[in-house]
Image: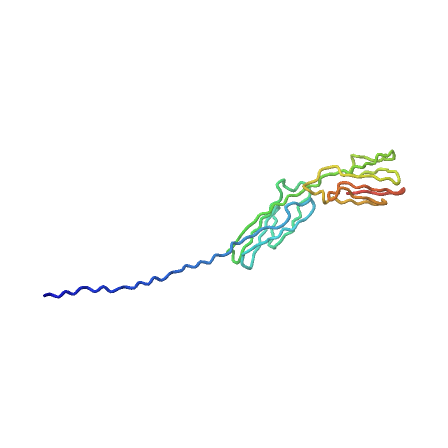
Length: 201
């Protein structure tokens, strides 16, 4: 009788080792220009660079109208008075970069300049002694009777919502009351004895 050798099956142990892939997500660099977008003609405003997640040292690069350049973190802008301002406003560009130019982010800011708009002071003085008033002139010279109360109001349009910036100055009166706060569009003046006085806005 023949003997057969049967193959022996050895169990194999397979170990599975998990593999991990790690990734570092860097914060997104950001920059923005902070400052007013409206300015009255003849005034100056400050624009500031606000940035996040940009490694030091940080490099600033500003450009603007008329060949304007700066490398400061903030700039002071004084728009020209008169017709030198485009209708679309003044556009300023800012680029903020990290070391060796590795990171660079940009922002744009537009400043619109509000022109001077003529306004007229209208007097409620209807007394006969009011003989020197010339409505077509910027500065009025009127006569008023002693110890009378006269209301002066503004006639004209106001740019934007600037009524709250109206301020009055009165000299030579015994007292006065500013009306319609916070817009202050009129003032009632109590004139005293004979003399000189003025109302300006």
